[in-house]
Structure formats: structure tokens, C-alpha cells
Image (tube, rainbow, N blue to C red; front, side, top):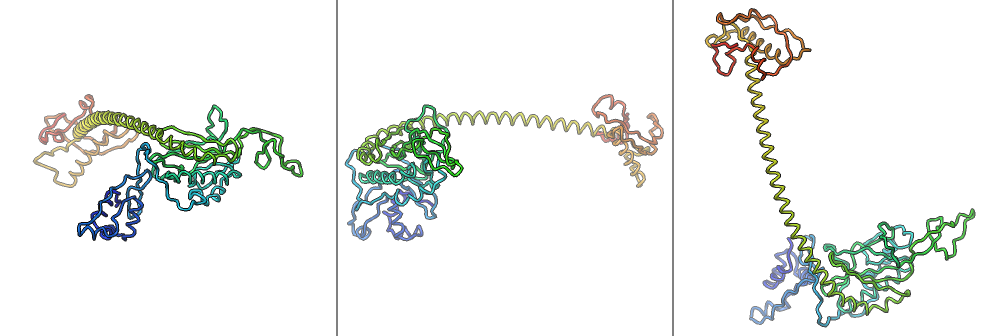
Length: 471
């Protein structure tokens, strides 16, 4: 079960740490580390002893969570929610410098990542690195410029953190966007939708200027250059010395084209990682190696642009809320129309099913009556004298089967069905002795001419009067 910062804050200030830790089935030292990770202030040493004698100090308030910090803890190690705070303009108070102690040589983000950058997919035609590992700082350059680019990134990150601005990879559970990088010095008017030079890390590199997040990208600028194709799949500038030809003269080709090749000059791009706040600014080297001289100016400009990014993000959130409310209204209207359509469709389907059942019931009643009218009784059978022997029952069953089969058999299914000798009462016309029933085509039982030509015994009708006979 997840425990929020507010809940943990109330618990540790209401009971001793050992009691709260035993309730969560952890040790008190582990719970102390959890409080430090969540930014929850803990009672000082001796607080509970002083509380018993009424000499306890003031209770510090719970500070608001910073963007990207965890806001809940789960013992099972489930997904951790982080603070999603709308960026506000940074405070104008004097910034507290971060206590570094001795300045490290490299920032932790770029320490020991050279090998990961060199483990790359096949390089593009322009020679840019495309590392297989993507949990890396946002640096995009060629192999020759990589050492200097890592050094510049480390100096920039350390300069930002010296004035209290935290530099880190974007949290995985928050949506920070990173626009594509166009490394060309003079990009064409038409966008390049397909390029093998594109690469981006798994998470953007973010610096938090107060609560405002600003994305940082360091990339190498390319220039349009005429190149010569080499047989082994490489391109070299036309002005460069061509490689040695092979024994048969196939070392290189005279065919040329134009590619965007790295120039060795790096550019720092700052951008807004918020979805509805479009802002970006670039600082490009005029000559290779002069970007570290601009770091102090870059830090001040980032601090100046933070309120602008905050205003853009706030306006974007307001527009998003308006669109969300409009979408909810449209969705409710759609659900209402869909419910009405389903109600009308259900009513129509019910009516059709009812009419179908009525038709089936009418057909079944008519079929039953028609089959009863085709059955011929044996002479002398009545309600008072039912069949008294097995022979009488066989004769009756044979008459019924002959009547039914003679109505449903097709003309091609010729059969001779023995029906026995049946005698009518003296008051009705005598049909004589029926020796055989010839099958006839299938007919409609509901047609009036068919019913008129059929002799029907009254004892098989629905009135149940076995004493009357109807023709």
C-alpha cells in the first residue's frame, strides 16, 4: 500500500519513529531514509522526551514537493508517483549556493559515459554517433568531437548546480518533450522528414530553475560539403586527400555528391519541455572551443527566460483545460446520442422479434390444423370405442404417417404408402377403400384452395369432438 508524504509526515510527528516503522514492517533507519528521500522533516533527537515534560520545539511545516521529486512511498517497490507541479516564476530572493565541497572534475551525468557513446549503431553518412544505449545525457556529435563535447557539458552542468539549479535526466513518469535536433548550419526551407542522422536519448536532460524545467541539448553543427564516395561505403570531402587506390584501381570513385558533415563546432540549445509552451534559444560557437567562455552568460540568460517559460506553460495549461472541458461536453453529447440510438434500435429489434414470433406461432397453428385435417380415422373409432388391439394402433399410425408424408414429400420421392381400409359413416359420402396414397408436391398449408379440397376428420380438430366428422 502506498503512503503519501502528507500521511507519513502526520504519522512520524504523532508517534515515535520505531512505532511507525513497526506498523509498516520496516526498520526505523530505513524509514528515516524514506523520509529523507521524500523531503519529509523528522523530529530531532530527544523530541519525545522533551514532549513528556512539555519542553518540545516547534513543529516544522511540510515543504511543498519540488518538480520531479517523489510524493509517495510503497514498501513493495511499486510505481512511484512524482510531483507534477505547474511551473511558477522562480523566486527573486537570493539563491542559496549548493554546498559542493571540493569541485568534482566531472558532473555525475557525464562521468564514465564515453564508452557508452562509442558503442554505436553503424554511423550515418555524415559521421554522427548513434549510441545503442539511450539512457545518456543529450549530446549529439561525431567521434572526433565527443571528448570536447563531454567536457563542455560537464562544465555547464556544474556551473548551473553551483548556483542552485539542479541538472538531471527527466523523470520517467512525467511527460517532458524533446523537439528534434536539426544539426545543419543552414537548414533548407523544406523539412527533412527522413534522415539517418537523427538520434535522441531515452529521457531529456533537464535543469530546474526553481520550479521551471528547461531542456538542454548539446550538438555539433554540420555544413553542406561536396564529398566523394569511397567504395567501402564512406564519403570523404573532395578537398581532402583521396585514399590510396587498390591494386586494380578500385580504391575510390570519381562520383561526387553533397552531404552535411560535422564542423567540430558545438551548439547549446535550451528549449521548453512543456507540451504547449514553445520556446528555444541557441548558443553556437563561432570558433571551436569558445563555448565554455560563454557559460556564465548562458546561466544568467536561462534564469531570465525562466519566467517567460512559466507564463507560456501556464497559458498552455489554461488552453488545455478549455479544450478538455469542450471535449467533455462533446463526449457527453455523443454518449447521449448513442444511448438514444441504442434505445431506438432496441425498440425496433424487439418489435421485429415480436412480429417474427407472432408469424412463427401463426404458422405453427396453421400447420398443426392442416396436419390434423389430413389424418383419416378408422371406421368405427369413436370416443366410446378406442383402439383395443395392437393392430388397431398400427393402422391408425400408418394412416397418420401417410397423410403427413403425402403432404411434405417432393414429386421425385415416389412411394406407395398402404393406409388400410377405412369406412365412412352412412350419413357422409363413402370414399371407398383406400389402397395407396400417391405423394404430391409440397403445398402451402395456409392457402384457401388447398384447405377446401382436403377432407379433415373432426376428431383431429381443436374442438376435440370425436363424434363429428368434417369435410
